[in-house]
Amino acid sequence: MSENLAITPEQLDLLQHAIGYTSEKVENGIFVFGRNWCAYKEENASWEELVKKGYASKRALRNLFDEAVYHVSKKGVKLLETSLLISIIPRSDMEETLK
Image (cartoon, rainbow, N blue to C red; front, side, top):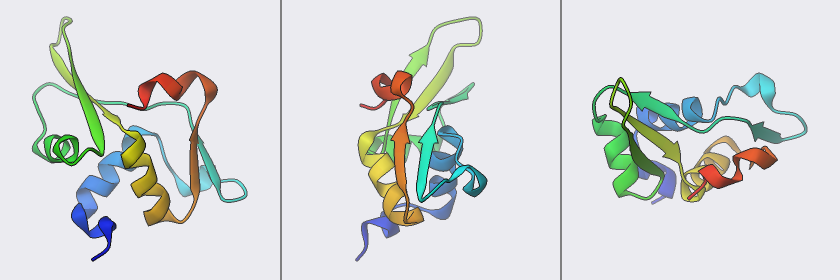
């Protein structure tokens, strides 16, 4: 069984959204991301499952909105690379978002 089947199509879309992926931004088989986050007012069940599986991390943002902020992990990036058949690399200032 492929590791890709371990998540739902919705969860795959969430991972792509968090890093700002669109196929139009792929050049020579490489996508460079300059963001890595997705915020919700409340915990999101699909993201929580991704966190449990190691494909994402979460932090609580204690501000005016008290949001749950999710980030794609290194394992999540590897899953996206396998699913999309491309290389995905962070812009140099985004390295610290990968845990």
